Image 1 (spheres, protein in one colour):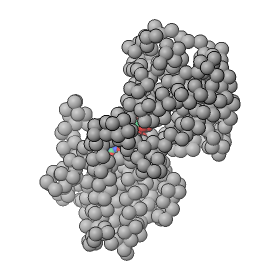
Image 2 (cartoon, protein in one colour; image 1 turned 90 degrees about the horizontal axis):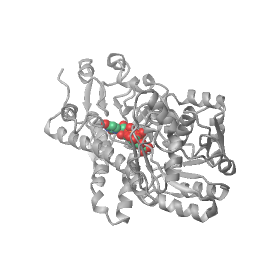
Image 3 (spheres, helix red, strand yellow; image 1 turned 180 degrees about the vertical axis):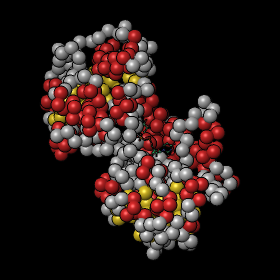
Image 4 (cartoon, protein in one colour; image 1 turned 135 degrees about the vertical axis):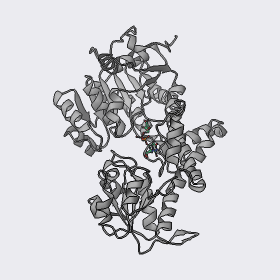
Length: 479
Ligand code: UGA
């Protein structure tokens, strides 16, 4: 059987496959209602599909069913409530209900870093696929969305074969997601591309039917959604390759920041200048305290681990350097803090005992409450460990930060965090911090020392207001 690799779904030339449930549009299930699955479930209901969201976490499902998104994502709350009210969107903790309902089952569970190494923990993928497969009573398509090591789709196919009746002809496909926290609704409704790994025309047709709403929306807005139809391995690799590239781009500019620091250059100017070259582009060239979150750090580690297993470890050795450059930026902030506060550094790091430091930002990036592998929170914890009295403030991430680092002190506002501080560290570029008035803040602090860990403040303005300003990879501003 030939797969129409170049077939462009948006031409409308692609044949629509009849969903096994007998309804006109396939019914969709999203298994795992974390950040990825909940966003997809809500947005696909918005596109007009009948959707069932599944999770084993009863508290999470109860919250979603009651119209509350369990995390911070702009625009998602209203969409959730609207689609619950329309009746198109429901949530469940029952595999039997999911199996009975859907034609296409999207696997959206987490694939965290394994506790015993750099590889990905696939136990949630295994549990969701196995339990779903055991309950299937008619033909269906199981589509992996989670970020996984290459080879996982084939293994999922074997799991499905083991746990379903072959007469049902249940099939597997892979379709990675590329959504960014803070822009997730747009990224799902108006994706910059769709990638599918399929093995049959039927799977391809079902996926087309399951995405027709995305293409129809694009058509009404006179947009094209690029599509890549490919094999399993390529589809899996596209996702990790994309994240590896983004991580490399960030570490590249942070490596330039390191050089600027010793050579007396300004990395923000450098980034701007190289970014004008369209072959380089100016996005993802913001030097600062580095990348964090639930994706980039763990994905580059899992990618290296998998390449090593496959005998191509050397090809990805540079990702180890990407990781190291990234982590060195966190140490750099701690070092800068010690320098500014005039504290000596021994072999165990600086002694910051008796100092008061305000850390502005706990989320791994603005417009998110996610603190997984957050550079800001990691730096806050290191400063506290070095003896500083640290007050952390984040507009949305405090609850998650407190759960992750309960030993830290959290402030209820920026004002509370900075009052009496000898040093202010801006480590997540929330608009509230970017737009803060240095004169007003200057009246609250004990000393006007600021580290701009995201190069997001107006350096000359802060300097002119009497602050000693330090960015990353930048010289001190001339007053
Ligand atoms: C990332 C990818 O950007 C998405 O395309 C992908 O779908 C997602 O992972 C995933 O695998 O699910 P996300 O984790 O939401 O998305 O965050 P990014 O916007 O990529 O930012 C990652 C980190 O890099 C943040 O800590 C951010 O502050 C940092 N960053 C970003 C920089 O330090 N400099 C930059 O120029 C850009």
